[in-house]
Image (cartoon, rainbow, N blue to C red):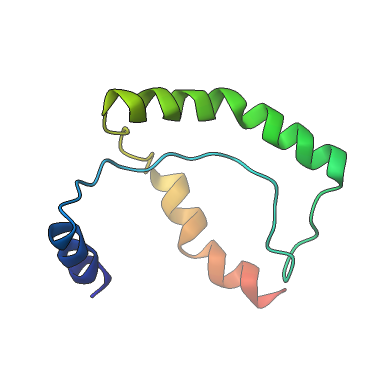
Length: 89
């Protein structure tokens, strides 16, 4: 259903899907996790700067982002591990 809505909106607005990029930022979901201290958060944002610059370069050049990594480890961590993780929170 979600893909149908996304595809419909994409056609209506004449958008082209270019992929996604991962930028590691400070945790802000404070309902489940503690937010980092101010200095630690600044450090995380500072470390993200090179990745942000690469994203901006691709966007300005109109280049698609490479497909996300998808391997057995990733499928395992988002599959059976997630329900176990959230059960103990």
